[in-house]
Picture 1 (cartoon, rainbow, N blue to C red):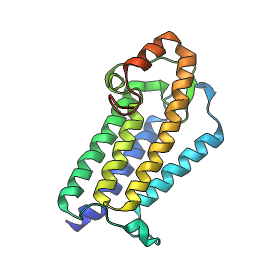
Picture 2 (picture 1 turned 45 degrees about the vertical axis):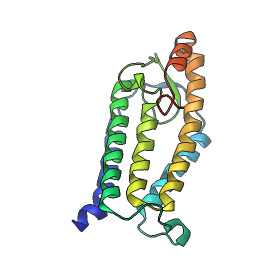
Picture 3 (picture 1 turned 180 degrees about the horizontal axis):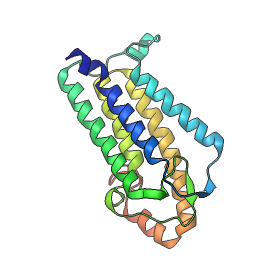
Picture 4 (picture 1 turned 90 degrees about the vertical axis):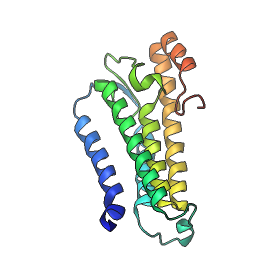
Length: 190
C-alpha cells in the first residue's frame, strides 16, 4: 500500500502529460500566437507548481506546514478530485480537436466550440487542470500545495483573459453572447 501512496499521483500526472503530448501532434496551424515570454512564464509557473506538490519534503520547512490532517480520507478525496479534474480537462481537449494549442492562439479556420464541457465553463481545460492541482494539494495537505494552487490559478486566469480578448476579436457578437452566458473558469462564479 505504501507504493500507492508514494507513486499514485506521479503515475496520474505522467499519464495526463503523455496524453497531451500525443494529442498535441494533430492540430491546425496558427495565424496568431501569444508571446514567447508569456508562454515561458506560464511554463515555469506550472513546473514550479508541480515541483512544489511532488517533492516529498521541502528544504524550506514553512512549506511543509500541515494544513489538512495526514489521513487516508484526504488522500483518497484528493485522488478523486485530481482524476476528475484531469479527465474533465481531457474531455475538453477532445472537443477542441484541431483547434487546441498549448499557447493562446487563433487558428487557421478557427472554430468556436461551445458544446460538451464548453457548456459548463468557457475554459474547461483550465478548470480541469486547476482541479487536478487542488486534488493533489488536498492529498499533500501542506502549505506548498496551497501555494501551487494559487500560482496555477493566477497564470491560468491571466491566460484565459488573453484568450477571451482574442476570441471576442475573432468571433465578435457570437463570442460576446457565449461569454455572457457561460462562466469562464468556475461555474456560476468566475
